Image (cartoon, rainbow, N blue to C red; front, top):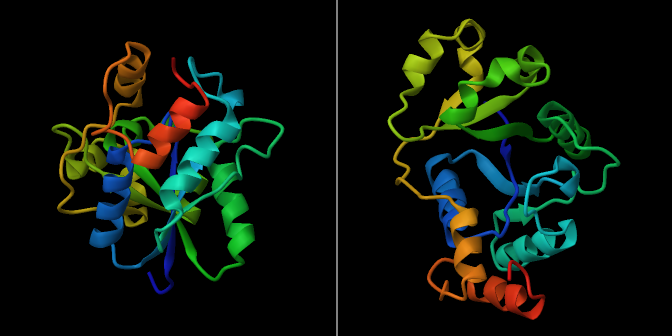
Length: 202
């Protein structure tokens, strides 16, 4: 890659937790070409159960990114009148940054194995790079060998090395909050204060 990279980290972030920040920082540390990593929360149009309002999840991510040079949050999906496919979101970022940066999408191997079911996977792999995180006991090379579409487009895949195994489960945190348990070690202080002040997940 000749250009610097904008890395797009999509998810529900319901709520954003320490693990999300730790993972984002590890990705940046291990992929030197990343200029910035942008959290992109999905909108409530996604119709996921127990999804807090768009503005709350966006505001919590803003609190996380406030003092971080390479972390940002975008409301690019929240502003749309429909739930976007990943390819549509990446196209919007490509327009926004006008060719100055390459746009990459962060994806775990659990989703990579299902990429043929995604909207327009051929163009997704042709026009964009995928930063791949190996999940559980997955091996990227095995997944590529067993997939025609990935074998043809292996140059689109960037494997991130030396990522610590991180347990990402906002639902686990939501359950603890609902049960009145202490979650201080799982959530940044500012985010926890926001959750309490807005009575979220209770």
